[in-house]
Length: 622
Image (cartoon, rainbow, N blue to C red; front, side):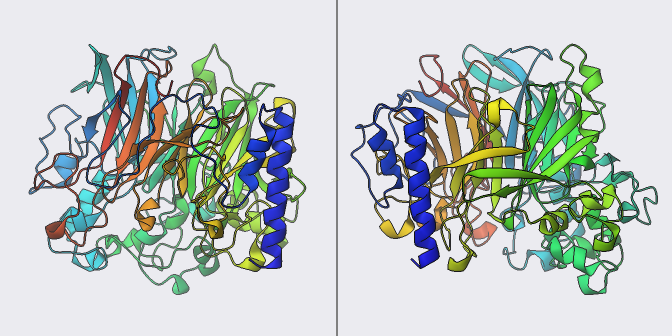
């Protein structure tokens, strides 16, 4: 550890100790011990409100939950969800069939109660992102490395039909969840769905193409990672950077610098550019600018058109989680999931109307996008990304507000935002009002690049920050912040993990990704990347305050090659939905599968949503 790393490690220790004192814990010394590198007390010495029997670390081709819980597959890739859809046939995949079936690689889950506006916990809509496709475990005769050259047009069409978003009506009867077949609400959004473009960048010259000279109508979505739910009952789906879905020569395009900043290099991972000219960078250089947005959809209206909301900025969106501020405006927290990228916040200009749902439908078109500068003294400054301010001028390459939003990364560069360790989920705790920002990892950070908010070089393990809005004002210009935890194995001092000292040998984890909060305000953390450490990805839970603060306990272990995404609770806290994404992704080919989950035998692995309930009918975790 070099001098800079030691300084920041000591600073984190000091901040964690100060945080414990401010909380007035019964065992301040115990929580302060989080800051001690490698220190770990025996499990059970520190109290946790989570009463489930923690799993023992396990990594096999099954999913595991604690005794007293049941995790049942609810909907799998390929399950028919639309009227007349064909049954899943892994040997006869087609775009036509996939259009009526549940999508691939499920991620974000939003549970929307039925009827709209209620808190019903046994009947609702599951709104599920389908992030991307794995051609080497969908089609025969190809590897992950050569799929781009081998996929046929029909296979490319299957993949684009398989990603996007799926809406399914679900109902709990006699304690068991099932999808409602042929529901009027069931729907697929795909890589070929028509979208409207709204907000300050709509119609901008950088969004205009030969097929859409108006710059207001886009075709398709993709890499739909996490997302969010609005207070008025719509879904926000995040496009997490479609850079490797395009081909062509970026250097010959009209805007090579912009393409490079957004990592559009012509790699064409799925071979789409071989079949469609708009996916060729040097033929349609503005087509990429129509992706990497947050889009909104009303799941209660089967005819609603999804809308890309440009006021929320363009970058590799991971999540878009909102809260109604004390003054009635809505605040959306946004993270850019890439190395050395930024944390963002959007504050609406208008106020949420709780009695008129229709009045809220365009709230996200007007407001202020800002980016975070995280300071070593424990303060955080939100810097507005507004045209004409902070150097965002025509002379600096920002002709208007639309261009600021299209080039949000470049705007963040220009105003001196803090470069983070791959921001993932970014979410307010609805009970406490505190905000948690997840940094999954950053192996590229060098020793001379560490800072207070990113205190480890070659950070392979990830960490979570806790942000505190002053007096609960989420629109305030400045926050304070603390380290909630630094992930890793506390038994290995060189990793620099900082967890509650009561964390067991099964409770530590790496690479936090998606998070959720149960009705009691406890944090549930999904991981993505544990397979690199020869352990299963899974779901961990912890208190955010009290003696059990940051005492993570393992609740779920994923099957081989899979990650845990999209944790989502019903309003009563008695059901937890999770996505098991890309089982068997580590397979060499379809002919050499490492996983046959969830159906077993010699079946093809199928990404699946699980419904988890407690056998006694009680709340999850308690």
